[in-house]
Image (cartoon, rainbow, N blue to C red):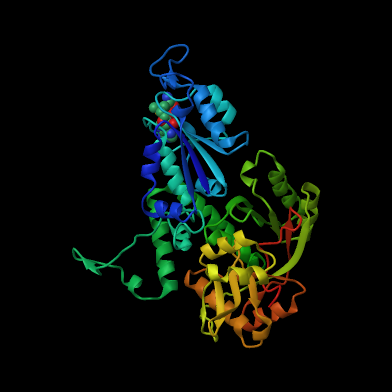
Length: 478
Ligand code: SAM
């Protein structure tokens, strides 16, 4: 991802962001930081960029022309997502950071003095963002705050993406208290459970502390969390049919767009997936009407619908151009005990597995491989040091991509890969689940063998673009 910062103080931005994690991310080429000095674009002989505001009043304003030319030096006529940082903007949130992290390029415009001539803002700015209800002397610190928060969501920037998934705000809760060595300090002990090594109990304890903390200091966030818990409860009446929606909510992913009784609609921006279930066609119709509203700009990355009832397929086809349709059943692992993993050499897939992955997984391209690798949930099975199979977590949260080399099939490598992934997910107290094409008998048998429960009802994956086949289904090719 590339950031272009239009500023009067480029060195402040460059110096402020070139150390530690963001410095390394730049060295690795995961993010690019480009600071443009607005002053370089003034036509004034003395390098002046500001002037008095018409109508009087205190202070000076940055003029339109140098800002516009500095912008065009980057955009060159392209329409780029351009944020003006201003106390008059929408408050910056983690959700916004997630949305900006999907952009390939982002322009940040920093004001100074009393601000910037309105006319150039009207021409180039797409978003107005404030970092809080206070006034700073310039936009450089707000731009840096935004770049920091956005960059750490770019795959690969944090070594372990699960840390971004479990920290404050990521599941609408504040983070739980954390402790490091020594075990005893100033007479205070680290809570015993954290020393127990029982990952599931630790996850539960952490969740409880997060809930307590959020309820105490952020009732606004807590209300959102409670709404999600209520939706999970409604969905749990048909757990096997709704596990994908329940897990998305429980893992803090996706936004609850609507919930009333058995009608629930979620949207996950990261994977561009909208999940819908409805009790009646009428309920479904009114939810889908909300989606078709062009002002629902939050949905602009929307690529997939996953729906639980056939009538929703018909209603969606009336409202959207749909080019791809798959029928699947869901399988989920709800048992407590970890699964035995017979094949021992299973580890995280790294760059060295890219060619093998791309050769054998036809539904994902290089960027999907990188994204899944960075998620920390893409595993390879090795036989005598040679990569022979893989499995991973799709960006919507379902397990999938299972593949084993033909020559090595029948040795339990596929079931070991899936058992391994299931165990990792159970450690996080997540319920592992996958989507299987309804006619994939082989995969259904594997799920049953491993102790997963299959849904009775079908779910439909509907794609808005032809050939948009990544991000779907387990075991097309076990
Ligand atoms: N006169 C402006 C107003 O009342 O909205 C304030 C100008 S401020 C002194 C100078 C610049 O700092 C702004 O143009 C903006 O880019 C930046 N700035 C100040 N406070 C900010 C905040 N809370 N969030 C984002 N940007 C801010």
